[in-house]
Length: 286
Image (tube, rainbow, N blue to C red; front, side, top):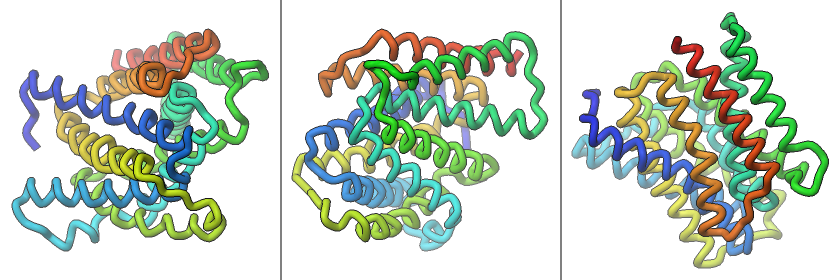
């Protein structure tokens, strides 16, 4: 895949990051009212995401190839489903910025943890970065007025672990957009399992449904397509650093669109967590 020009790279990367942050904002908008139940939101998000990704593939290749839906794997699709389902249920109880920070922190710390398990050796400043990030993560969830819901925290942590697993599973993919399309197609019907325990909670309002479609088709489908278009021109460290912006964009969106306050605890935790992870990423590049 050819590398995009500098201007196109900036535009595609910016739009992709906005899309990632928009997932948190749209989900919170839909589920805080609520105007849709978490199971239906997850289903609408995955189905619309799958349809949008298939449409992008058709436009890109000017034809439909049934092999696209046979790519990916059931393992990755299951991880994608767990991520999306836990993400939705977590946002019933978490504010936008808090949820995004927990998700991001879990993903990044898991990725770093896997690297350590595989033999990565951290030096002085990298070790300091890990300590600061972990301490900030713990500070966010310590008992206090601003502490997030325990259930919401656990669900978003599960979502982050699943997304980290999905990322690791697809690390060596030679066709990430094709595999992601197939994984969305495989993951969509798995939502039916959630309707068994939550059949009595079904609520599908017009506003909630279209917010879910926006999350799936635009923030996820188009967002992932743009991100994969930009990735060839970004180093792994650059990609990691850029993703540090996602919780900050989500926090801003939570204030502007959901009218949520920013607590001092969240601001300090975000500064420590994002700063600590950035320090590790920068030192790994040095």
